[in-house]
Image 1 (spheres, rainbow, N blue to C red):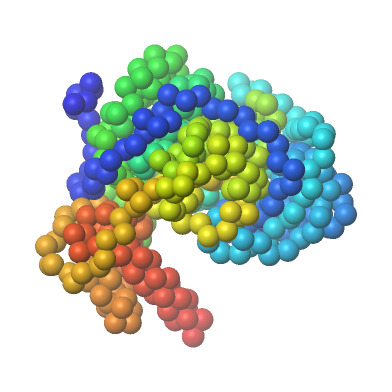
Image 2 (cartoon, helix red, strand yellow):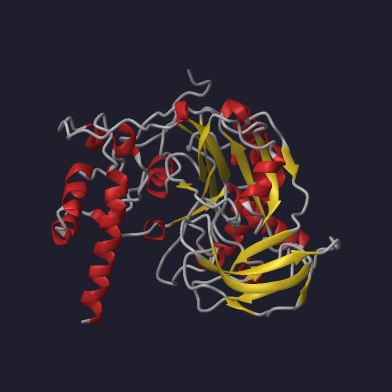
Length: 445
């Protein structure tokens, strides 16, 4: 039972086991620098950055090694000092090979910083420019360049910044630890985001399974004008943008529209802390904070590691895997990506590494659809997952498009609830990709 009454929420969703007790009481540990890093030049939605270095170049931690290529793009900074070994296509935690800069690390640890700015006198334009220069991207999963979100079109009137503190994915406790350990930086970062957008209202949405964080943030927020703490029902996917806006502002984001179309900008806990660090400390985004958990890892932890650190190094730092481990997932268990190559590097938006045992993984065989409707009841966007899955399998892309397949946010609630163990979200993801390709072909025709 929640300690807080009147928790807000949305229709639909599921309640998977949380497993947060494995790491929720563990403070962040700073992982030692790796001997080498693999720094992808695309760690964000949009166009990949363009390399600024070549093989043999000596680089310093914090130095920009790739520049943005277009408006929706983001610079990449070197996470360690050392020498560029080569630039080539490498395995990636996204599941797709990407061009990356391989760097052999040196013993030097000095960080090349940007000039420190005063958060009291900084202008909105200076905030946006600093966020862009620091290479900050969203840490909620999508890795959207943050300065773009802080630069909405002039015809969009923004009145609220909402911070996603739900962390509704099972196992993950990174944001929870941020709320407890970096409370002032979180509120300061939110204040900077509000200033950049010229809005008077900021809200932090937190699920009611985090009473300690709620109490601490409410006490600290009393010193900030216009910032409120909104207690939300613990339910997946409460932290999804549309669900969060519905719960906090009671506004519906129409299909095909964005949060800014209803006057809202959403940011993640880690993102606004990175904004604070970039402004107040002059630090570019070269680290990733994450939860390493699951019953298959020997020593679950919350850690801060340098971007580009191979998965194998992080797993080793956490004591290695148990003999019962059967799967490694980057991200949460609902929307994360299963890994096949442990040399793949972590990226700016990496929030978790899960090492799972057989008891944590559903490997039951698929059976025919029971037509029970559970996936429809659970879908927070009111889609019909069974039909979308079937249309994909039958290559009826136009029918899938008409049913709103591109609206799907791939949260996985349908697959989780399916008693027939049909991989609904995987089929929908495939169909969505095909429909998007079809739409591109129409535009170019």
